[in-house]
Image 1: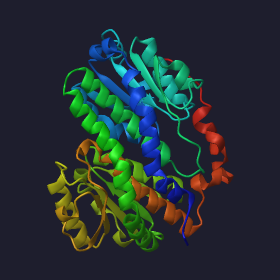
Image 2: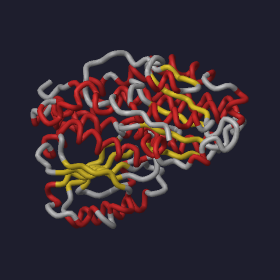
Image 3: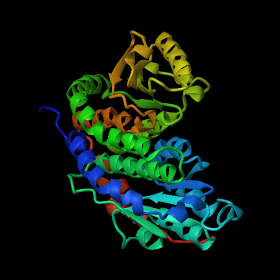
Amino acid sequence: MKYDNAMRRQVMSLPELIRTQYKDLEPNTRCVLTTPEIFSIQKILLTGCGDSYAAALASKYAFESLTGVPTEVVTAIELSRYYPEKQLGFAPHNPLVIAVSNSGKVARVGEAIQRAAAHDAFSLGITGSRDSLLGKSSGRVLDLDVPPFESAPGTRSYMVALMSLFLIAIRIGEVRGNYTMDHAMDIRHEMAAMADKMEDALCKMDQQVINLAESWKDMEAYDFIGSGADYAAAWFGHAKIFEALGRYSMHINTEDWLHLNCFMRRVEKIGTVLVCGGDSPAKSRAGELLGYAEKMGRSMVVITDNPKAFPIESACCIQVPASKFALLNPMMQFVPICLLAGYMMEMTGEENGRGCKGPWSFCKGGAAIHNSEIEII
């Protein structure tokens, strides 16, 4: 294939990754927290950096709807340096702080967990290394085992982070009696079934994205728009543009785009991606946004499981598989974004993270995020 690349190969490996990771994660998420620990939870904090932060954004509403427990997404540096001390350890084993880092080496994530523990909060680390800073600092650890693969802007690791968080949320809600065990298994089985659905959709999606990448590879900037859980894919998208292309990019919610980003000049040079599930409460506002963008001459793409909801002729719709449970939609929405970033990186001859060369050499091996002073405040 002319534009094959490592990021595309990561995407194409996702169906099998879902199958193998489900078999590993499903039983492990059942026992990582005890029943008394689950019943004691009064508040949940989700934290991480980069892609892990996006995974937290993607799962926030799933946690709230499934567990019935108020859930916040907090950046690692906010949790480690600014989060109110009185809100950590306000009750025994509370809040439950769930931190995600595949490597476990990110200094700020480890610091956040250490601070939470120092103030008597309860912590769960999701990581591929128990011997890492995060693994050693967490009260409980969910072990990740993501098989090695050729390097590219995070794709496989993001899928596993999503699956881990969703499965934990399902388990907490199940134990707390918010729904039957049969319903919990229906959601779990639907997660596993997403592998087949993705496999069936990838060929058409791949060709659509190749064509889009050819027309967008010389854009000067990119907007990614979404609301609710869809916003996570928008956040993830802007991050992939930074990593893959090193160009200007922004994530924004559907409402604020009409307050801010619509005033940008040179609209013909801004590739604009709207992520919106077919059942999204913000669907009507997304439709209005598309109408205004069409009048402006914006180059628009909509990532959705229901293209009929957005009958705008000037907007290209990339259809992702629909889930029986809307909370699982984030497992699919980021996939065309990875393909797009990978193809444009290949077409323009860019290197992931600028190859950590020259002005970016301080990033090599993750040094800038791993080697940082730990302060417990």
